[in-house]
Image (cartoon, rainbow, N blue to C red; front, top):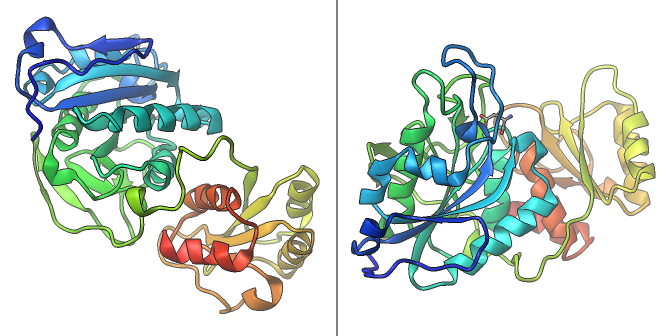
Length: 354
Ligand code: GLU
C-alpha cells in the first residue's frame, strides 16, 4: 500500500477532491472517472424503472458513498455524462489518455470508472488493451438509478474502490466489479436487460468475489493485456471504422456490400453457431476481403469459441476468426489491430493472443 499524507493533485477540469479531513489520512489515492450511465441516473419516483441516465455528477456519486472515503482518498473526474449506448471512439480516447496520465503518477494506486452497463464490456476490453499500467482499473455501474429502491450503485462503487485501492488487484488487467463479483475485461458480458445480476463471464468464470469491500481473487487471466499489449493509448489517435453484421436465416449479402460501400475497413460477422452465415453472405464477405476489407467471424451464440476452417474455408477466403470474443469485443480488437496492420495472418495472431 502506498502511504501518503498529501492529497493527489491534478490540474484536470471538473475535478472533485475529497474533503479536507480525508487529506491527512494515510490511504491509497484512487481516481474516480465518471462517464455517465444508470449509476448516475435519476428518476422522479423510486418505484419504477423510468429514469434519465448520466445526470448525477461525479461529486455527488462520491458523496453518496461516504464509507468509500475510509478505503481511499478519492479524486473525481467527470469525463462524460452519457448513457453508454452513446459511448464512442472520441470519449474512449479522452478516457484512456486521462487514465494513462493519472496512472503514471506514482502517488495513484488505482482507478474506478463509472459507466453505463450496456457497453461496459467494450470499454473495459478496449482499456485492457491500451492502458500501459498494472495498477487496478475497475469499471463499475448500476442497473438501478441512484434514486431507485435498492439502488445497486452505492455498493458497487464502494466495492470498486476497495479493489482499485488494493495491491492485491494488480496485474489482472482491467476489471469489472458489479453485484459482489469481479470479472476480467476479456470475459465479461452483459447478459440480462434488467437484473442486477447481469454481468457474467460465460466462457471462463469470475476472477474474484467481494463481500462489503473485502475480496478474494481466485484465478488470473492468461491472455495478454495492459503492460504486455502491443497496443498503447500513447500511440493511437483514432480508430478505423469497423462494423458488426448480424447473421440470421434468409440472409443475403446486401448489408455486407453496403458496409464496404460506406467505407468500413473491417467487418465482424455475428455469425450463427461457429461464426457461420448463408452462402450468399459468405460470398459477399469473400468479395469484401478481395477489396481489402478485413473480415472477422464471431458468433451470436452466447458462449464458445469460433474456430478456423470448420464449415467455412478461412484459409481460402482470407478470413479471421474471433476465438472466444463476442462480436462487440471482436470489433474493438479489430479496430486496434487495424491501427497496426491489415495483414490477416497478423490480425489472426492478435485474436489468439488477446
Ligand atoms: N443505457 C444506459 C447505459 O448503458 C443505461 C443502462 C445502465 O447503465 O445500466 O448507460
